[in-house]
Image (cartoon, rainbow, N blue to C red):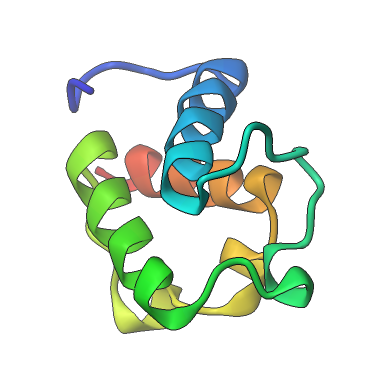
Length: 88
């Protein structure tokens, strides 16, 4: 995705939905599905997710960004991505 592109909330959600489905090998990931409590997002998948988020959304994820609230659900990841893109 282009760095200068202002993404709508639904565009980010749609893109993240596809990314998470591919990463987690799931047909669908509900926007409010708790990825932490379900255990579907393990540590190696977290690393892959971070790399893909940085690559696909042209953002930088720092140690300070890595907390459960930013990555608990598809919705929280979308909020995080939009906030990081707004910082750029």
